[in-house]
Length: 483
Image (cartoon, rainbow, N blue to C red; front, side, top):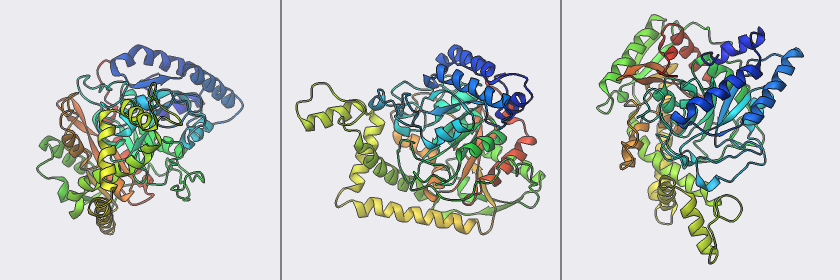
């Protein structure tokens, strides 16, 4: 049962080969048995899961249908879930039980999805390795000595280890696509505003976007169908009709124009990954795609711009965690200033503190124009590069990451080295574009991903290309040994 994809589960439930309750119990037992090796979950919600599974079985018995009805999933632990701990991987929110459901959680629950638990993550989604969580590092099921990527590493590790078929995740600078690449999954970051951010605890509000992590593009289409849509509670949500993402999966790629930026193949890219990307290009050419070299000249400025904008927004968003209203509060504060200082000092880990300080500095009087304003101008240039490119091509293809997953702890003493791993992913967040990572092979036994980018609201095109690629390759079917 645990080897089934979301689409296979939907067919099995429809054909009454098993019930949602049976499947849920099998996966909960599997999580209990195997997750101690991975540390991919922060909270398990066994009672809720069984209750939701029974309700889904009743709905099916009464004639209802739907791809997500009775399907087991998990939520990254920054989506608020009513009455359940929502920690953001931080000591600051270890005692916080959300009083409401995030829109994504509510929509998936209404579709009949069964919540098995909340997955581990980098603290407040700040990280590329899932090592900054207060609950400990997550291990990569492909090699337990390596990172699974971040910040959605818990969701990625759980799905890759076949503990469940799919999970929600979020992407601020690559935090869906990079873990997908490191764990041999398909991960989709939708267009900014396509998926509601209401109830999704913010890191950087103009960059954060929720999306799915699953084994196949077909499964990501099913998940996105349940997650996407306008939400009047979210001022950044865009009122755009949601297409049937599964309907276009079978479209031909004949004549599809794929742009390959020359900047992607610089000295920083592992040559073995470059070779796998070229192999992926050849596969797509066999399916009728036309390849064209393009240029994204401002890509080199994206990392410094991102690491000014994101911390600046984080410093503002995280100011609410002050020991007064909710979250961690220090013992016996001497006065209000002591309460603020010690509550935040004890509640936030070093990576979060680092980014808050960088952000506060960038926004301070005398430095706003030099840093934050300039970074926003670079952001516009990055977007303009993409707009010019999409006048010539339909999608853009390249590596998801410059290197495979590194060993646990290898970059802890050099945060900038970890930041540089985001070089191919952050441009999509700066421009608000949809992006997808899909399995493309292995280097030293570790998975490698290929990234696809598309114009705004063209998630269906990304899923179509990835699905056609997966019909003709088998990378996505490989399973980590022991799982």
